[in-house]
Length: 622
Image (spheres, rainbow, N blue to C red):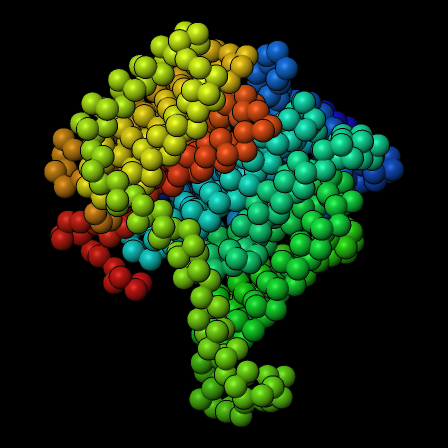
């Protein structure tokens, strides 16, 4: 039965590839490909599930593809199937099947019909990879696919200001979750000295023996997993992104943020439960996060004026309860709760336009006075305080901006003195000096050799931070992103036993993707003079092919699983020592800001209201 597991990834992936070849005017063919793909997976999974249950529901694991192998390191795709996978895959395929049928008529004659079904199938492929993943590397592949498909669907109405702005905001929260997962992968490599599979985590003796002698690193991995899960499932303090993600079409809101994508954080906790189940502090912390989120989201949902925001906060509250169930070890209850919440929120979002219409009509003919609620029994000062805080959504947006994004932007603006000419004049000689010291270690003292990696990665972080806050020159921002990658490689190269071939794999993806990104911008500048980062330009409307080329190049440059950069990032982290937590954190932050800078460039140049006045422009609040 193990050999059948890749089939559940291949079905949606083949559907995605076929949908790319179908012209956009053939709506019927596009929709049929989508729901036939989802339907084929659903019915195949039903037959597979019956056979699996008849055999006693064994744990299935298959090591599918070895992508890279070297001394002490192996990067491979691993697929794993248990009851958690069965429930998530069954719910996902069934809901995707229903949504594709619904969307066939809902989006009829909509601009971007082809783009919608392409992205849905792309998302479904990433979802299948995620829930079937048998190790962290495979999970991270699907995790990244979910992130970029979320960005594309939130920004589906790409000629409007708010959908594009909120898509970038949601993607930035996803990148925070990426930090936790990257650091968990790094620490896990050093804890197990191998690419550990989730199948091996079910070996109690193995896990207990390792954690007994490495309790600190075990807690670090668990906390990193919690950060990733909280960010992906919109738990505190990341809860404010989910209502903003409702800017896309109603079907995508239903399948992404009501049912499937928002529960991936829960899946991560369930999948890694055998690792942290004996860490009492971590279990309490997960339960506290879930409890606080549930209380906050429950009262916030009651005062929302938008039906989608009400459903979003209600879903957040239920996911908080599922966090508590997972922390308590109630896996079966959590799976039932996930399935129920997913189906309910999907239904609510799909019927929400009709419900709003009925309520508007009913309020004119059937007035009902407000019913007394629990809040009326509270002291008035407390009741009004809760009401105002809920209206402001507990200032979570402001909190994230003040804690995270505003300091980065403020620091980036302080670095305006770094332009490309000054950077090249100073940093190129420094880089050459670092290479000389790398190959002539006897010329430097041990103290200098230990300080160089921190200095190099700090320079990389400064460059990418400057690119993240650049508001004028696109090519300058791209150049700084590319230079930042080179400084990261130099920083890691000073660690012992570093393989130069690993650097070449990583840099081959950076150089290749960077070349095509610069080529796309130069091609755009030949016809469009106004190309800067000060506003949204919407050039995808007139230059869709250039926009697609730049998007693919930006993803490759950011380490998306379509280029050697993705494998290179994992190789880079495998050479960071366990006692180099500062270095690992700075490298992870550099990678995250790289992705944010590149997505910001793409959004500013190609998305949003068109800069030319002879095109229709939606209101800013639309």
